[in-house]
Length: 530
Image (cartoon, rainbow, N blue to C red; front, side, top):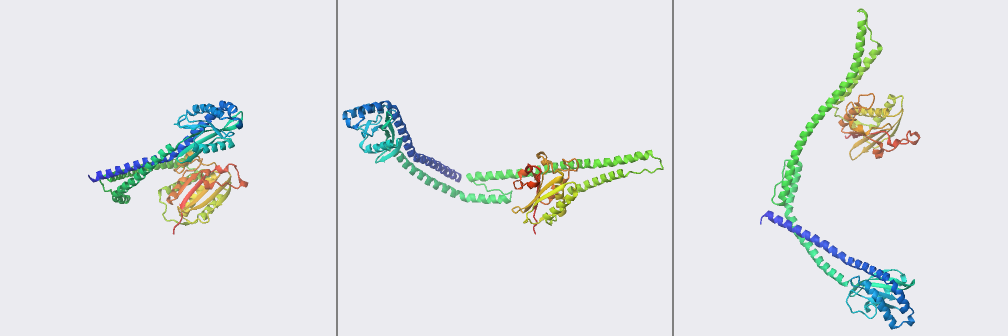
C-alpha cells in the first residue's frame, strides 16, 4: 500500500466515522425529544377524547342522572348498576375511536365512578370504576376539576404506571354533577424509547471517540507537510517566482493547484500591467487632445478680437491719405491689451500642468492661511455681503505644503463659493485632525444652488465649466496641486456629510431648507512631520 492509498484510506475512514457520528448524534437528539413528544401527544389525545365524551354523551347523562342517580339516600345497587351499563355504552362507543384509552364518569354527590369502559385494551375489567391503584388519583383530579369547573390534564406516575389523565366537568339541566375522565397508559412506549436512547447514546459516544482518534491521527500525518506549505506560501508572498514543493496524495493536489494559481496570477499581473500601460497612454493622448483643443479655443477668441481690431485700423489706413497718420483709439488699445493679458494668464495657468510642483514642503499654519484668504475674498467682491462661520480645530498641527499653492487652492474655492451664492453670501469653514490617517481636513460649505450630480465626474477636467465666463481650469489646477501634496479633494451634498449638517444661526437664515442646499468641498492634506 503506497503513501497515497494510505492517505486516502485514512481520509475516507475519518469522514465515514464523522458522518456516522453526526447521524447517531441527531438520532440521539431525536430520541431525547421523543419522550416529551410521547407525553405531549398523548395528553392531547386524552383531552380530545374527554371533550368528545362530554359532548356526545350529553343527551344521555341528564336522564340517567335524574332517573337512577340523583338523591344519594334513595339509590339502590340495582339502579347504580343499571346506570353504569347505560352510560358505559356511550363511553365504549366514543372511546372505541381511540387506541388504548379508558374512561368514564365520576359523580361527586354519590362519590362513585359510573360508565367505566376500555373498549380497545385487554381485560380484566373491575366491577365499577377504574382499577384500585388508580382509583384515588382519578377521583382526586376529578374533584379538582369540579371545584375549578374547567378542563384539567395532568401526567401521573406510580411504579410502573405512567399515564396522562384529562378530566372535564359534566352538567345535567345546567347543574354541575360530576366530571368525565379519560386516560392512556404510556409506560411501555416510554420504556422502549429509553432503551433505544441508551443504546444510541453509547453508540454516539463511541462513534465520537473513534472519529476523534482517526481524525487526530490523520491530522498528525498532515502536520509536517502543511507546515512546509505554509512556509512556502510565506516565501511566495515576497518572491512571486517561488513555487511550492509538489507532494503525493491530497497535499500534492493542493500544492499543484496553488502553483497553478500562482502561475495564472503572475501571467494576469503581467497582462494587467501591459493593459494599464496602454490605457494610460490612450488616456494621456486623449487628455492631451482635449487640452490642445481647449487651449486652441481659448486662445483663438482673443486672437480673433485682436485681429479684428487690427483689420479695422488697416481699413482706416487705406481710406486715409498717404501722409496722414492713422491713430488707434484708446478703446481698441484697451481691448487688445485685455485680450493679450487673457492669453498670457491662460498660458501661465497651463504651465502648472507642464512643470513639476516643487517637492519641498514646509510647515504651514492652515488656520492663518484660511483667515488671510477670507479677508482677500471680502476685498475682491465689494458688491457682496460675505459672512463667515468658522469652526477650527485647535489641536490641528501644521500641514506640509507649499504655502502659495495651497493659498491659490483656498482662494479659488472661496471665489467659487461666492460666485455660486447670492449677494448675501454665507460660508462655513471647518477644520479637523484625522489622527489615524495623520491628515488635516478642511471643509468649506456654501449655501448656493449646489452642484448637479451629473457633472461631478467632469469637474476636474481641464476647460470644463458651467459658468458663462471663465476658462474651466480652476478646479483642474486645484486638483493637480492637492494631488502633488499627496492629498485629496472632493465635493459632497450637505446631507451626505453627517458631521457637517450644521446650519447658519437662526437669526440669519435665508432659506428654511438651507440644511440641504449648497455644496461642501472636503480637502485632506498630510500634516508636517519633523
